[in-house]
Length: 266
Ligand code: SF4
Image (cartoon, rainbow, N blue to C red; front, top):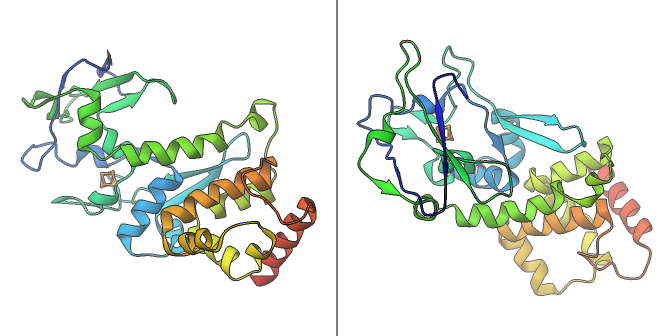
């Protein structure tokens, strides 16, 4: 947070003034020089709006890092211009507005820390000559719930909660770390969905899993189902949870065979 900004803790019923629109002199300023971490659902929505494959989108617009626990961290890559502007910002606003990520929707609300119900509202006052965020001076008022509804946050929260079951897993609390092979598997299943689809449908993946035909069809046709299945696969293959039921009892053999099949298909 920049010097001069203030933070106010909001209760669920507190009202705050905010409106961002094209007439404001500071319109688009917040879409530059910022770190935006992308969840798998962010990636899915942005990529869908961009019309690119997941692999191409990841390559062009993101930077992938590895966190301390070996978890992939995917960050939106800002442009190399002087302002370090977001690649999706245009004079008329966000070019992928319907697919913009969670952090952009939530602004100006920031979680105190993940999982807590309270939020901080951050107001940017001018610093030296820089224009400040004028959205806070608008008359429109909200409570947190109204803002989230207006910004279409519910589906993001739902999908992100499922992802947290991976990132906040007991496996990590016990001090474990993902090795590179496992981190790559997680990245593919959660972020590189076109690759994950190939992994499922261009190998004999489903021959070894006890799953209904109807469910397979849903995964094939609906990308949200594919992502949810990716989460289940990660919990099964990395943490040995019973989120999937292999046919027979040879779980290790199944995992090994699917990995080898996948690597051979590349
Ligand atoms: S994705 Fe859209 S809203 Fe978010 S920083 Fe980029 S231009 Fe702004």
